[in-house]
Image (cartoon, rainbow, N blue to C red):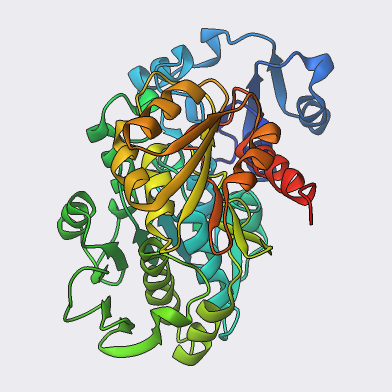
Length: 451
């Protein structure tokens, strides 16, 4: 890692611990900064804070005094989930104190180049595909960001011959200032996280931070079928590598007569891909364009796309049970993600959906329920809302109390050749702590079905 002097002897406030805040505080302390850590959890319940205190950091727990933010701070490093209307963050902005996330620290110390991957949907699959393809080449890939280890932990241990493959959220990107990935990948932009960003425009601007510092040598991989993504990319500087599943391009990646094309040469046929759906063709094109920049053999890239088994909870194939293909798409925490999943299948679908009620309706699901689905089982806070949308679409509907109850009811609706799909279209927090916990519950319930 680069032993930078930027923070040596300077005061830095780390707001919010969890994994990213703890890693940032440890790194800054090792760089000679005077680190103050502020976390909501009381010290007696906060093992991470106690360890940082023992190492020499100043720790303030259980409250958030505004006096922690002053004009002498070199930076405020905040947990990505903390909003910008937090009083301490607002005060830092007013005083001109840089507000950053640990991704910015990772970039400042890294000897390895970054592939930065963002988008509303498909980030994790694209990140994993790029990682697996890069493993076939001469560079050592290291996964970081929203998936795997915290970015600044990975960067501190990365060599110049490595490549950091980073999945980046809008929350993380808002806290970047000098961050400049060697390859920047922007997949799509939908209405998401508006409770955090306030408006779609602000959300898109946060995603666009990925391109903020690109130069003539930077590689921009972007979805030219998405008007907002296309606009952001065309305004940025760099070597443009667009991809599309709707149109034939003159450069980049596209779909032509069923073939995935990279810079005018066929990579593989869509029927040979292990993952279903046009959205996964988009992910594959993006990952291939990002990875082949580092000289990976095209045949090696094609082999990964043929054999990749998917990412857990993201249209993950669970098993074929008595002629029914069962998929876990617990990561579908919004309506567009569930629509994308339904588009992926040509077979009839029995859908399980439901979860936290955020006040939205589900009429946008109705056209795809009509086209793809012959049975819906709903559960959780949104059970009646989704059931209403399904009934409007003319689809047979059952309401269950819990996901565990929903699985056998849904299986009873399936016929040989069907797909049984968990794709909730809602956040998980009414019955589960995380979408991962929800997906695990689904898989466990599938395992209990009659064989």
